[in-house]
Length: 281
Image (cartoon, rainbow, N blue to C red; front, side):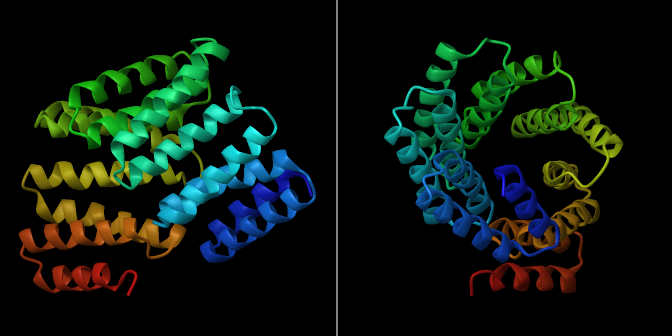
């Protein structure tokens, strides 16, 4: 089976809500391909697993997948390759997700150095890199640095075609920066732009969930607590459907509980607190 068929099957399992089966399938395929000497396929599987285990909240598994992909590339003398830099980027994103921010930014800068050496400045991968670097900066409370990098990412994306989802995601991230600075009207404009783009796209794009998180935060800051709760309620449902009751699901439930309590919806608040507490028990 070609690697594209493997990844298609992986995505099918995820779309069916079979996240555990999807992870097991990809891990088994990675081991099988490595044992058969098919390094490129094993690397692709490990790279995909890095992100999969990240969103599932499994730090050790996510890191192990990234480190295995890097080791396979190094074993073939590819430390200074675009593929190696892309694995570094994904590893950095996992580090950022688990709040190991100095390590994440260091990995991003290593990836950036390789990209600068090997890729044209207009390459799509720079847009992805700057977007992910910006998210780590925002988590580090470097709002200005984050905003600058989101703007660099958006500037590149707007010159490309078929990147509407990425443009919407970048606008959402810029809205998060504006929320951090309490510039609520400007944040609303950015968020509405992102929401409009996602509504026009076909299918069920998981990146759209970031707009729900941003909407929940914006409505809460505006004192519209019931509307905030509704956004977080939808976000929690989407995460559970795609990835199960992960740490991200628990975070959405906690935010929903907080908004429900502020809206005077005490039974709903209690229910979502219980759902959050049930994760990993």
